[in-house]
Structures are given as C-alpha cells and as structure tokens.
Length: 136
View (tube, rainbow, N blue to C red):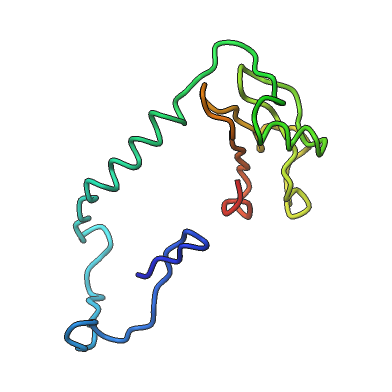
C-alpha cells in the first residue's frame, strides 16, 4: 500500500516485488478471510484516533452557538446552506454536493455542521451520503 497524501487514501501499487530484495510478492489465496488473524494497530495510530475522538468528536456544547463565530458555520450561512440548530453546536445543513445525492430531502439530517470546541475557530461538516465521503 502506498499513501497518497493529496487525497488521504490508501491505494494498492502494482506488484513490483519487495523494494529491498526485488523478489516478487506471493499472495496466499487459500485462507478464508475469517481465518486470517488481524494484526494489532500500531500505537501511534491508536493515539491519533483516541486524540481525535476525545478532543473534537466527543465535545458537546451546553448552550446555543452562533454559526457566524466559526468559519464553517459562517461559510454555510453565507451560501444559504445552513439550517436550524438542532442541539447546541449542531446545525442541519444542505450539502454543497447535493446535486450528486440520489436520495434524501433538504435539511433531513443527512448533512450537519458542527461548531468547534471552545478556543477553536474552524468547525466542520459531515454528509452521510456515500459519494460525499471525501469532502467535509
């Protein structure tokens, strides 16, 4: 696997062989997927996941948030894509990529804007439609 930093996805590179020995890779295809042990995740990766969860994703505002006080909220409001605040710091929104959506209705909760934790100014949005996974 080779990291593609521009798109932050992993892609498979062609089988060229091991970079040190130049021996061709051999793939074992006789094992069933449920028989193959999964390697433990490296500690550095677990640390990144846990840090993101605790510092951003688990923060809950206790009072209403003005969307003009953070960048993503102001941008969505400026483009008339921001809907009502459904709980403190969480707003219904129209997805900027809604022309690609095949199901759903405006402000149905599939796209939401999140206010950032105190001290941060960006915020973020999330769209639940599969073709929007690379944005937001």
